[in-house]
Image 1 (tube, helix red, strand yellow):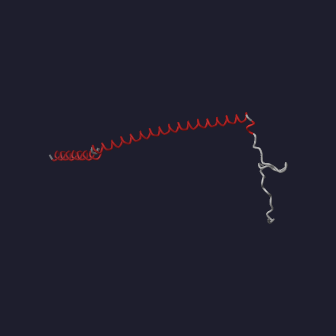
Image 2 (tube, one colour):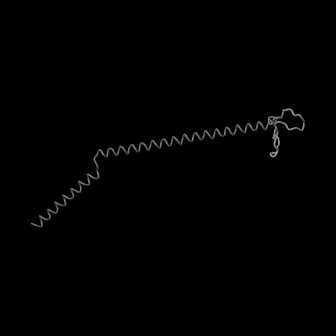
Image 3 (cartoon, one colour):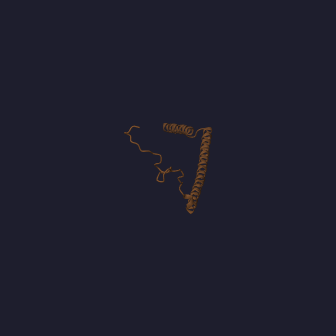
Length: 129
């Protein structure tokens, strides 16, 4: 009988150990439903924020592309405008006549007012005025 009672005691001890182990594992691994609900809400909120961020980034890059396209078209229009203006000036060579010097001169060999050296007098630094 002692062998049978020993076996029964060992079996009961083993069953009690399994029950305690199972109880500890359940309480540590699966938290309460309230905590699970909060965590799931946070995950859903993060997914929503990420999707919103992606949509905003897409909209930003699409708008940037449109603005760059408009800038390129404006640059081309300005380039065409200047090209047409230069072609008109080349056709009308009379429009490119340099300005004339209308200031009266005392002598024919005197420099006019549009000359680079007009009005500049040379002077010696050693000489006192």
